[in-house]
Amino acid sequence: MEKIFSRDSIGGMRNTLIYVIGLVVIVGGLFYLAQDKSALSSDYKNIEYTVDKKPVQLTNGLSELSIASSSAKIVTRYFGNEIKKDLNGDDREDIAFILTQETGGTGTFYYVAAALNTEDGYVGSDALYLGDRIAPQGMEPGPGSSIIVNYADRKIGEAMTVDPSVGKSLRLLLNENTMQFGEVAEDFAGEANPERMTLTMKTWNWTKTTYESGKVVTPREQLFGIKFLANGTFVAGSDCNSMGGKYSAVNGSITFSDVSSTKMYCANSQEDDFKVVFDQAQKFRFTSKGELIFDLKMDSGTIIFK
Image (cartoon, rainbow, N blue to C red; front, side, top):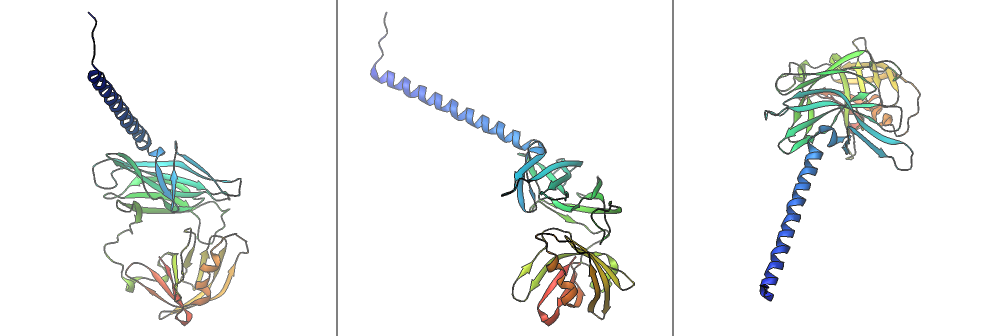
């Protein structure tokens, strides 16, 4: 017997078919997105990190970005020395490791980065700069959620052609909110005591210059430092040249003299901003934050080292 379908029943079947097809498409799309998200986030060598304040997407541990008006590339790559440890106290195993970045010049810049293991996959951190052409020596677990990064560097003032020979260790903690590493001073509990701090206690690294006019200068790279010696001399290094000379520090006043420097030319160097300390520093003081602050002549500004 031939079945006869009414116009209404045919319309209903058509609507049902459209609904089913739509549902299949939506479910399939969600499945695809879930698979795609998993592929992007389940491998820490295939997620985004922040290097020198710029986002860097690694693919199989490598990123290559073209530089405008140049044949060179910014190459960021997974180096290794990884350590697996819970870095944020959530009982999940995270990963910290070394990244390198080459920006078209002679430098190879080393960073420590972390990948937090979340329910949705790995999340990349802000990479912490370690140095240019250093020699990584491995990482190890530290107290609590901290890690210890070991590497060899050059002495302040040594040329970049000299092999790294000075052993250094950094104890680092990852701030889960900012996704940035912070250094933990050894045997440090609470605030620093300015009365116990001295010029010769460590190598001081330039962090910021603030002028009375409102101008602020911060180093693009952590390559600027001063080492004061007990015999009244100092050595210093910038992003281009090595320097040295004499200093006199009495009752909070300071003067620099007989300052000499190598004579290399480096494009886009911040050396002139750094050398202001030798020409303009008049007084110095320490803070409970562990800072060394130089007050410039004529109350024109301050230079902060840490």
